[in-house]
Figure (cartoon, rainbow, N blue to C red):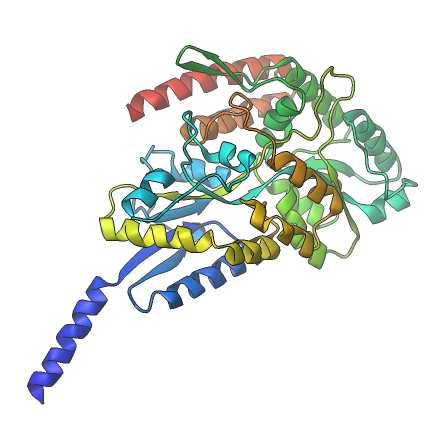
Length: 417
């Protein structure tokens, strides 16, 4: 009996030792966290004790030097997470080492473009991306005598609308979230002015394009007239819109999943505004961005095998559809695109998503993922503060941001090399 009991304990100990646990650090909240928890629980059940994923909230991590196996983080949190330049293991390498098939061809071209490197290889899995849109409070529009079914399409119409709202007593007509992505990267993309210039193997970030100078100068004038309110470089503006304090918000399309079920006022969604007086403007050419799934280096082979199985699980058509339907994030592949429609997504967003994600990649439209993009956004946020304080004009702030971003990117590449 004792021998049998001892044998059972040894077998149990060996099986527990063999079971891999991967820590997935994230910054998800609300419906997105509920959906992620459900998928992880379902994946763990399928493993029959041979491995599991454990979720870890970034906000509760005190020791940032202790790195997880996986990280599902948005661009703002990635800067905090990657500020010491820990190397990450590219997605295509994880799948190869884990012995899992991986075919990027079913992905929308624009989703690949958001997470690939200079050679077109996917660095991470773009599971939680969005596009920039204009949200507006339909009830406030009615009170201001504006047609709630005719949102502004151009920035000049936004100015006129903001003026009408301000005159009607609304103290915050317009605010924004994720300023650098929305008001610099996307404004640049919409008006055919690339974020990068390439000479040989060298790239230079260009934050100071003519349309960007024009746009930041216009926003600065709106700030002085109280039409536009800036609350920070991240998602600070979301709360101001959710509370009803601000009437219009430029932010992430995925916010609609939260807005549609919790607000005491009717919400409208429209495409990102543009300048109709800029020749060749392409208002639908916005840039998907958001949280993607990263893989940390230096792990064991069987840990990467489990990570690869998790990726394969997430890429199943039924899992993709459930995720998109629950969260409102952009579909990675065409098989999950229909889930946005069944989730009740705004027709304006649906039309834009279907057209935009299918467009070919544009290599110079955005900085590539990783240190360069994160640091450029952080620097831009610092320099924009001088514009709001009226201590630098728009052009000087953007010129300085461009110089600093290129210097920081060069230093980052040197550290990586």
